[in-house]
Length: 358
Image 1 (tube, one colour):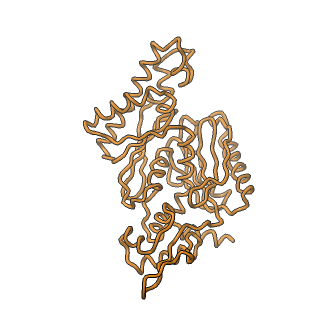
Image 2: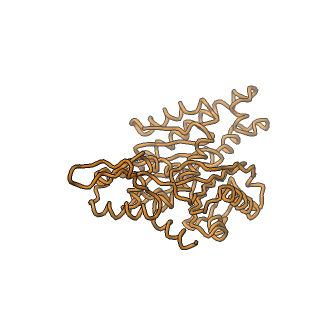
Image 3: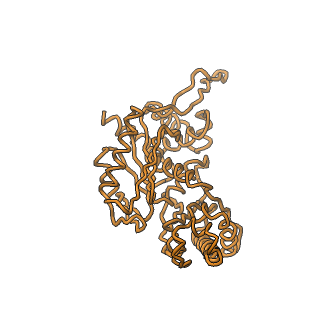
C-alpha cells in the first residue's frame, strides 16, 4: 500500500535522519525504541548504501567509551521523479532524497483532449529531458492523478477522460525503475506523513475538491483511498447548479458580477456541502487532522469559512482543519511525496536495484 509508515529499522532511521540536521545513534535508539545492535546494523547499511554519512569531524568524546559520531543525510547520486497530472498542465520534477527540487517543468497538456498514449509519451519525453539535464541516474518514479488507481498503476479518472489507462505499466517499461502511481488525495496524506518526526504519525485525512472529489486516510498499513461519489460538489456540479451559459468556469462563478445573485449562493452551498462531507468522513475515520486542497477552497476566498463551520457542526466537536493555500504548493508537495515514497519505505531495496542496473 502507498505511503506506508516506516517499518524496517533502516527506513525508520532514514526517516528521522532526513528530517533533522544531525542525529546520533543514541537518539535513534530513543526515538525508535529499537535496540543498540539493531540501530547499529541499520545505520551501517544506510551508510553503505550512500544515504547517510558519519560526521567524524564532529565526533565528541564520552570518556572511556566510543566517541559519539553524529549522522547526517548524505547526497546520493540517484534522483527521484515526481509527476503530478492535472487537467490542463502536468508538473514534473526531480528530487534528491532530502526532498530538494533539483529541476522541474510544467507541461501545458489538456489531458482530456489528447490521445492517452500521446499524453504518456509527452510525460516520458519530459522526464527524459530533465534526467539528462542533471546527469544523474533515476532511481524511482512517482505519479499522482485524479480518480482511482489500481495497485499496478492503472488510472480511471472521468475528468481526464481516462478509463483503466496503464500509466504505471508503461512508465515501468520505459524507465526500468520502480514506479508508484497514487491518487492526489493519497499523496496529500503521504506528504503530511513524510514531514512528521513522529513515527507513530497521528491519523490524517485529506479531502481534495476540484474537477473531481477525492479522499484518503491513514491506516495501519499505509494510506487508503476513500471512495466519494459526490459529482454535485465538483466544479462541473457547481456550474450545472448555477445554470448560466456565461458562467463556464469556477473563476467566472467567483468573479462574474452579473450573476452573483445565483453564483454566490451556489458557491456557499457547495462549501457547506464539502464541510458536511468532511464532517461525515471524520465521524467514520476519526482523523487527528483534516487537510483540504483544491480549487474549491483555493479559488473561492469565501469558501473556507462556511466549509469549516459545516464540518464542525456535522462532527459536533472541534476538528483540526488545515488548508493547502495554493495550487502550486499542493502540486509541489504531492509530486515530492510520491517521488520519495518508495525510497523512504524501502531504502535498501531501492539502492540494491540501482546497483544491479549498473
